[in-house]
Image (cartoon, rainbow, N blue to C red; front, side, top):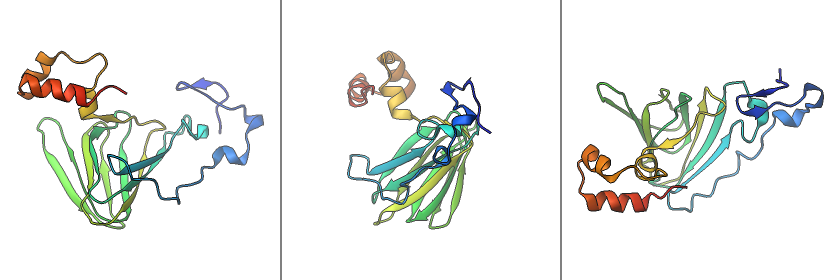
Length: 184
């Protein structure tokens, strides 16, 4: 079933115009380039590059990690994540709210871990070799908010006095972090 109207901020294709390629995405077998400052490559398969996902409530990410690469603390405000390790070893974790309890686990090839919707979580390749994982989401567009970018790189910036008090940091440290995490 494909919708034929404007839904969820995306246009749906007229059912009479639908072809097999509308349901197809290729290239997840090609290793992503991890030669960047984060040591990561994330290939998304979501409503933005596979329009047929509109209204279906699912999406996917293929994640290539260089050795010791980190996906910093972040959240998906619109989706729960199911992560499966295909190759390598990851340390993963999330923090619940009220109380702030940390759950962590070392994942190896074939292991699966769930990050509940909206909770802050992270992943780090703790091995000396590249790691490959796939993440599926129960949302066509789960969102991705990194904590450091949201707090220190907002546009306009959060008043430094708020961050000084909230994080109990020196004003110079807050100013440094706000310069380091400039808005995209």
